Length: 110
Ligand code: HEC
Image (cartoon, rainbow, N blue to C red; front, side):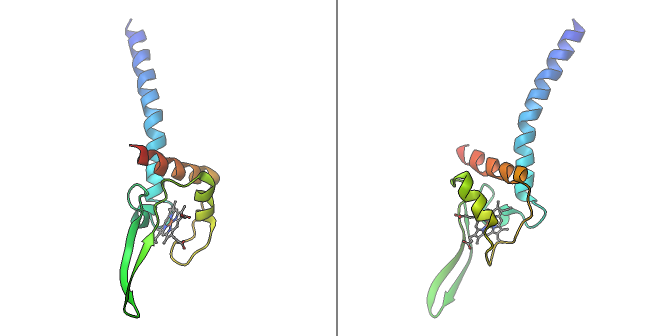
């Protein structure tokens, strides 16, 4: 009886643990992707953010990190791979990029 209970308990915990781990891992990667965290520019959940406001020849301008939580997986990949002037280049594996994509798209739905 005790054994059965212990087994039941550990199976339940393992299941919950696995679920948490995928999300926690993805969040951790989003905040610390071996470089400056995506959250610093794209916001805690990929909702996008104004990075700076400035004036150029008397015109008000904004420097924006776009929202990245509603892109297709392909656009997400392309956006990450595309070199640009502001966003740093990351060296992420396919699995890591999938986790990041999972994080921003899942966070958005909650
Ligand atoms: C220093 C600020 C900064 C950081 C850090 C950063 N980004 Fe960006 N990101 C930008 C800016 C600015 C753009 C728009 C760039 C452009 O179009 O040139 C962008 C564009 C993107 C795009 C393309 C969006 C689109 O609509 O095409 C994706 C996807 C993206 N970032 C994902 C990430 C992920 C994932 C991380 C973390 C691994 C990250 N970014 C970290 C600033 C940042």
